[in-house]
Length: 269
Image (cartoon, rainbow, N blue to C red; front, top):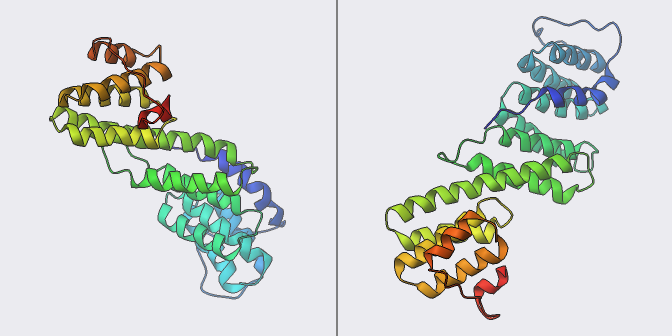
C-alpha cells in the first residue's frame, strides 16, 4: 500500500502547537543532563527540534515536559506532541501507546478526535498486501470505525470514512483470495464459507459481485443447482450489468430462481 503523506498532517498539527511557542527559544543539539527548567522552555525547545525533523529527540523532549511539570497545561499538549513525534519517526508502537494514554487520561479533551485519527493512521500505514497477515488492517478498521461513531461531526470523520471503506475492501480482498484458493483446490465447502463472509460482512465493497459468482460456481461444483440458481438471481438483481452476472447466468444455463420471502437469500433481493 502507498505510504501515507505525513506532511499534510504536519502543518495542521502546528496550528495549535505553535500557540505555545515563545520568542527567543534556543534549540539544543543534544538532551542535557537532568536539570529542572521552566516548562515553556522545555516545550519550545522540543517544538523547535520537531520542526527540524529530529523526531525521536523531539518525542523524548516532549516527554520531559510531562516528567518535570506533570500537572501543567503544557504537559497535556506535550503528551499528544510526543505521540505525533513518534508517528513522524515511524515508531508506530510507541505512538499508539502514547495516544492510548492520552485518550485514557483526557477523554473530554477537544484533541481526542485527533488522537483517534492519528492512532488509526499508525495502523493504516502498516497495512500490507492481501497475501500477508491483515492484523494492521483490522486494527485500522476498528479505530477508524470508533472515530466515526464517537465523533461523527469532527473534521477527521470524512477522511476516516474514506479510509474505513478502503480497509473493508482490503479485508474482503483477503477473504476472496482464500476463497479462490479453496475453490481451485476443490474444497468447495471451505470456499463457500469464505465467499459468504464477503457477502455478509462486506456488502459495500467491490468484491461482492465476484463473491456471488464464485459462490454459485461452488454450488454448481457440489451439485446444489437450486442454490446456485438463487445466487445467480441475486447477482443479476443487484448487479445486472456486471460481467460476473453474465458468467453466472451461463453457469446455471439461464435458469435463475428468485428467492422466496422465507429464503435466506431474499434479504439481498
